[in-house]
Length: 533
Image 1 (cartoon, rainbow, N blue to C red):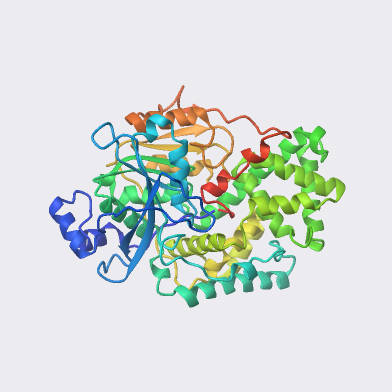
Image 2 (tube, rainbow, N blue to C red; image 1 turned 30 degrees about the vertical axis):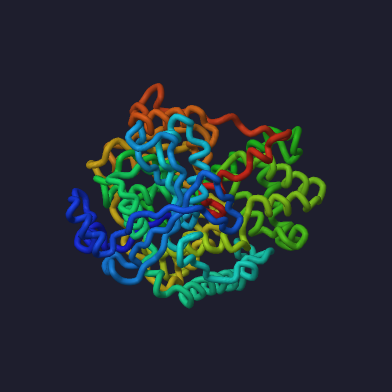
């Protein structure tokens, strides 16, 4: 998976350059505005962007922020934001703004804002203005990063993620280098400033432009790390904060990817075991060992005979990685697996690939460019490919499913034109109570990371949820949503232990029948996880 950190300019630059450090006075805020602080937001109607739906209730605007916070009056970036207003007016039970971030890095927060506003319990939605924002480089913000022609670069079938020899490896390395060079050619001036710390500063610029003394925040996946960085830099600006599917703040980013490989292996085995439990439907074997063997046999066959010339082994990896994020995808993927393995029918595989994987679109390429832009810059990555090779061979011996795919997804960082910085040491005891939410068998953000985040923020409480779905609240778990409601309305956290400290896993997916396709419509995509994050 990926996360982000920042360059080590830290809050001191903000204090010196913008005057927005913790405890800033009204006088220093006015001085900050003169020095480059964001002007007040001017809301207007939203325009349709790409395939994104525009909510009739949403208003849109842009916020101007410095490219480089060390030089706040220099070159500027424009961030696209939107707002779905609370039903209650200010001064009548209104609880302020709720900024939301879906993760990635590289996903649009404006789409998530619409989703959150629609799915919050009515009594909560009535009291918060939900604010979405596209982080620097993303979506409707300007400039928006893109490094390659998405149609040509992602044209399926791609090279097999698992190299069989050094020639295969050389081809995959050349592809990774090509991507890094494409980003360097287009964005060398911007890449040094694509950090999580700068995104946190951008969040505070949005807060300032909204004329809010403090923000409330809901972040998923990488958005939990962004929230943790913001809370560390600006503890006095936080009112309430919910971090769902928590990034390990101590593994940013290379080590987190290696840990993720093991977690995805476990989750893939969960899926194979579920298929075996429903052998009467899928007929792929009555044990996880047999269904796993069938899956790798399918993968090998696709290496030499891609399904309809589209789905090869790397496309299969992409598709089944989605199953690690959400078990809602399991029935459709299992049907495609069964149809191909038992009857040689490739149509379902191709349809599932087109449904779950967004490679080849401008939106997906933008997301990937920002993902790499942030993660490659945030922290140091090995520049010697021999380190990656040795680690991938070692980890794949026990975690075969994702290791090589994950390595190649991040491999451009080995050639990135800007070297990675030093991750911020997150944590603060100066915060109000904050809420962490984590599935026990989450593959993208393993549970141990949430426990570490809990220790670094002493005012936090961790709500543990059964199962392995990534992105818990507002996604069908009534227990978790009740805890979210109590917290957002009154600040009540889950108890430290005992009743109320955990929520049961949601019901397992139904192996066949009506409604499964609607159920599997990719909450993973909604929280910015179209790839192997």
